[in-house]
Length: 168
Image (tube, rainbow, N blue to C red; front, side):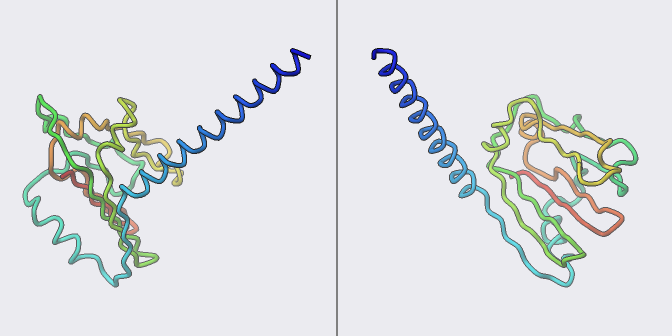
């Protein structure tokens, strides 16, 4: 009889742990969702939006440079731009243009979310494109903070997709 009670107690603890775990994961997911600001716009041409965003970075070399044919040529990370001390940043701002759908996406990523990856790095490889599968570029949140605010990436593909990333 005692074995039966212990079995029920262990089963109750396991069920309780699963419910609490699901609640913690759900809460964390909701907090992350609320912290990310995503806006989508239908535009004929994004040139004005990109020019406006790039105006404040006149003359700056992007921290990360990729060739127009992503997957061909080695990416260049200008680590010489990094300072000795990390600068506290609020987050990364991202503009993405998809010419096929004529959509401009604005995304704000908080730095605390990037820091959760630890020193594993933010993976910038493109796993969906066969050419991009061979390029693995990882930049850590600490490297971005040591770079400080400014232009991180300005990439235009041969298909006219465009990505602009800057730190604030």
